[in-house]
Image 1: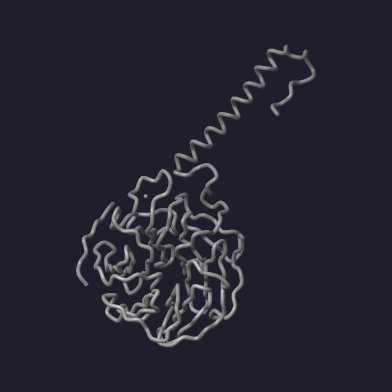
Image 2: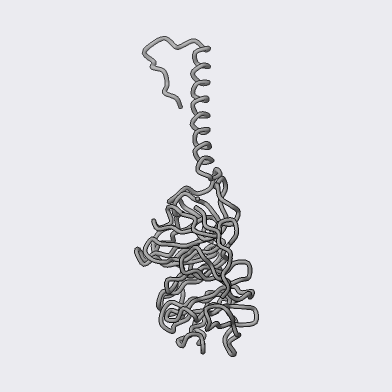
Length: 310
């Protein structure tokens, strides 16, 4: 791979007592006016507080109910075992029980999102309303479970639509090019190819699978070159949880599983429609649909709704 230019930066009023004389009508009018003005002042303070936090009225505050939609990336945090979704409307926590909630107060567009470790996430995308940041966030990092984010590199330059962290390296896909970094700051450029998703081998940092319109492509040189894998199903999303186990989902929602690193595939169940994001954690598989998150604990044979807001 050839080195690429790197940019490092730095995200009813109380009723009068009936024990005395009734106040004159002018006094009543003044009382009503005072109450109205007080209500207006409180409402104005709420609006100012929301705007100052970079949110418009009606957008969710941290911890509030949200709608799970436009999901660009999924990850399972090994610290709490919960599923986190990077979406167009912020980072969403989808618990095993209860409603999804917004993580933190930043409602920005997470185009790429991946979990590195407990409370440790990497992401990319675009800033939210009122957020002082360049149009493309480059690589950003959170070490407090998504509460706050720090810019690491390529701010203003890169908008990673897919991110993976493995073998001490970060793999990202931006502008049709696969890129790799071993320090989150300096990047090398690899192959240029139109892909929908990619996954890195759990055992070999040089083996990468990518989903393309021509079929599943495989790289054995760290993403410098790719070759289409003969006989593989046409997949939209792919996840490599561990060992030689690989999980893929086709554009129609059919789930396929490989137990030999993508060389051969077996059809399992289906999520019933086009998927938005996928993550596999052993035999636990999570697939985001528009407005829902489905979960399988039997390797993709059957699915049930972890959350369905439709």
